[in-house]
Image (cartoon, rainbow, N blue to C red; front, top):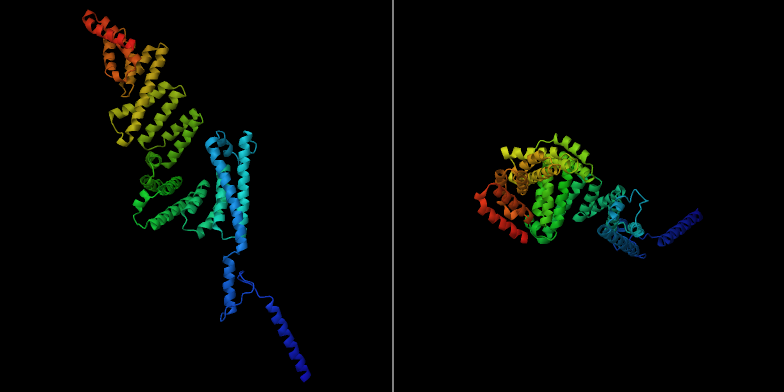
Length: 493
């Protein structure tokens, strides 16, 4: 019995010794900093193990971090090179616009070998940037710079090749970034831009707003002031804030929220960093206000203007006629009438119809003046174009020896208060040479604006006057002599 107990204790002792030896060679290094580290005196090993496991989760060892940084540096150089080439192409290469518009869909574009080489160089650099940023992130998942660089790579790729897949990739990265870097307004802005290009207006608006809020919080912190209006006007970053506001207004417009868009664009106008930017914002404000804030109609107008740019004039006129019937604001209707008249006169050989269309706007305003001061320049443009059309149509009829029709349109042009109505009067005086009284009466009106006449026009007017005076008899002899000397003096010049 004793021998059995002794054998049992001997076996247990051997097992304990084996376990202790085994443990001494297999202690887990949870920190990754020191293979021989021991638990601090008085600290429970389980507590230390939990703490060390968190450290391992949050940090990367120095060697991996160095390798990750090297990959990041390689990627950043390639990204900068791709961006530099792209910027040069945008500025200098006349045939690059169409090329890059179709990069993602057409691999057989016929362009110069030099341009094709630059395209391939951009692609190669973007591939290098993507590959090395990804390597860096694999080694160091906590590198925000690498993630931002990879997102920027996809953003540039999307800009060049016009493919949604790159914006979608950038969104995935940036959505993760903003969760960890909520104090960087530029990251929110990049994310908003990607959503904008994907036409996801609500997500874009949310992030543009967040970018603006973070920006204001940032400059408030830096300037130690709560006077945001002052900061917005004075800070050198004012252009950034303007961009954030303007982009918000565009998103709201795309969502057909006209009142909110107008409210934001007014803020952008107030914060504009330059006269040029303010004018851009004011033009957008006018666009939002068109037809009492009817954004759908304003969009249709913009689409029709694209038809005009493409030379589809008949189609544009037909579309304008349809749009005109959908409008409620008289000023918007007048604008469409003016645009139709311009197309009819210049491109569709419907000059009589164009003159009558535009003259109806002018006559209506003469009876009941209704244009507000803010639109008076627009109305004056209609008046001028109406006068120009009537003058040219009158001259067309003169060339065809259709004097009765010519007289009609020149008389209408002379009655319109535009800068060149004296031109119509001068031609009317020529048409009425057979009646000295009428021609003299007309020519006197022309000579009242001598400062506006060219030398040839002044000569023509004086010659008509001289001819009329001679026909009226000897009682106008002295005045005829004066006119004759004026003519001779002008001829010498």
